Image 1 (cartoon, rainbow, N blue to C red):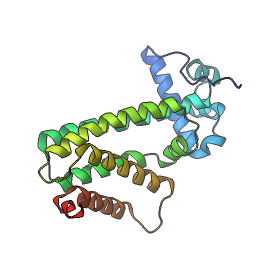
Image 2: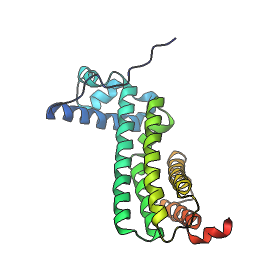
Image 3: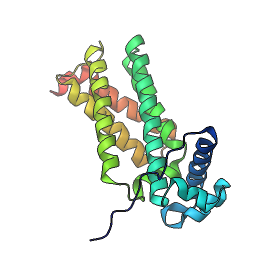
Image 4: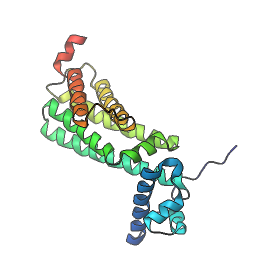
Length: 213
C-alpha cells in the first residue's frame, strides 16, 4: 500500500520575514501553475519564480501538492470571507431580490475569474485530498444556512422550504460559474452569462414560482 503523501506545511511562518517568504512562494506557485498546469509545474520552477532557494521552499512545503493545497485553501477562504461580508450587508439592508442575486452572482464570478487558469488547475487537475472537500462542504453548508435565513425573511421570495432553496441557489451558482471557467462558451459574454443566471434564479425564487407548484 503506497504511503500517504505529506501535504501539511512542514512549519508555520511566525515572523514577518518568514510570512513574506511563504507569501512569495505561494504567489510564485500560482503563476507557475497558471502557466505550466499541474503536470508542468515543479517545485524548482516555483522556487525560481518566487526568488527563493528550493531548500527554503521545502522548509515550508514538502512537495508541489502541498503547494496546491495551500493555494486551494487560500482561494476557499477568500471566497467564504467575501460571502460572509455580502450576507452581512444583505441582512442589514435587505435589498431587492434582483439586486441581491446580481451582487451575489457577480461577486462569485469575479472571484473565480481573477485567476481562471489557476482555478482550473486546482479544481480540475490537482489531486486535492478528500479532507479539503469535506471542509469545503461543511463551510458551504454553513453558508447555505445564512442564505436560507435571508430568503425566509425576504418579502419577494416565495418558497415552502428556504433551506432547500438556499442549497439550490448556492450549488447552481457554483456549478454554473465553474462550468463557465472550465469550458468557456465562445458565444456567451460574461455580462450575458450573469444576466441570464440572475434571471433564472429570480424566476425560481420570486412569487411567480408559486404557479409551478
